[in-house]
Image 1 (cartoon, protein in one colour):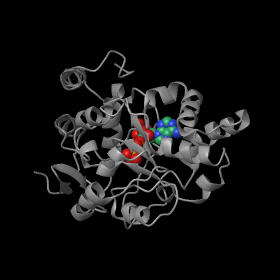
Image 2 (cartoon, helix red, strand yellow; image 1 turned 180 degrees about the horizontal axis):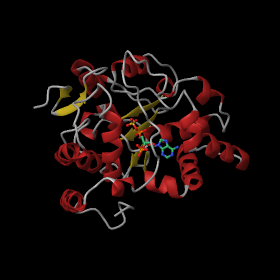
Image 3 (spheres, rainbow, N blue to C red; image 1 turned 90 degrees about the horizontal axis):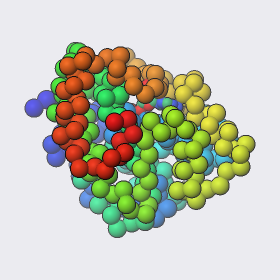
Image 4 (cartoon, protein in one colour; image 1 turned 90 degrees about the vertical axis):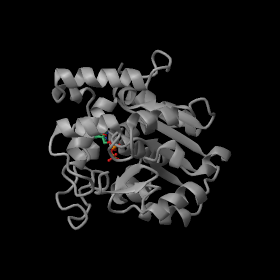
Length: 285
Ligand code: PPS
């Protein structure tokens, strides 16, 4: 087993900022409240894009909040040491995000009326995004090559475990009233339509000019320039090489990186592992 991670229940977490005891408390003791909103994703699915959109919906498109408060304070990351301690002490409606697979998520979710949005992205693009993002940090074992990371990803030997199991687990909640499933690919194709869908789910109404402001301030280029969002203010003492969150923001970048053999191997695993879902469940397939 790799030793460069914090392991909990067979799932790998970054070695910095995560502890088994906290992960256990998150699962067993964290109490979700009816007014909470949770952003759920497998890493590199567009978490921060969705978070920025939700923050901007809350301010009706006014960018002051997203331009003055770091995104990890606006939407604390539940399973981290810091995020957990912030959230347990927070009054009122809480906005949070989590990469946890369903079986490690707070049990209280299943008896609460809190709302959750699960964002899914083509795992091929997630693989490429993760390779370029994590590889440069000191948070994970360095895979040295995309080929090595590809093998790890298909086996689920990467942060937060297998994409296939993560998605299978959370999609079992898709019929719940307070659970919305979104796709990164749809967000790219029709961002405005997706923002409206999120507003409907949250019971928020935006005027057309407010909607345009949400669209503007959550666009890739504006987010890339926003130091409160693009991870550029994370100290070099934490991540010596820095972190480039806003890399390309496109769909299908995997085609620039996979060999033909890798593309075929991925297809085979995808079909095996995701068998049984109705046609159209994954818009990129
Ligand atoms: S993390 O580190 O797991 O929280 O990363 P996450 O935010 O989930 O995903 C990062 C990818 O999302 C892309 N991104 C966007 N795409 C389009 N539009 C906007 N506004 C946007 N914001 C973030 C980001 O570029 C990462 O994808 P890649 O493919 O690496 O560019």
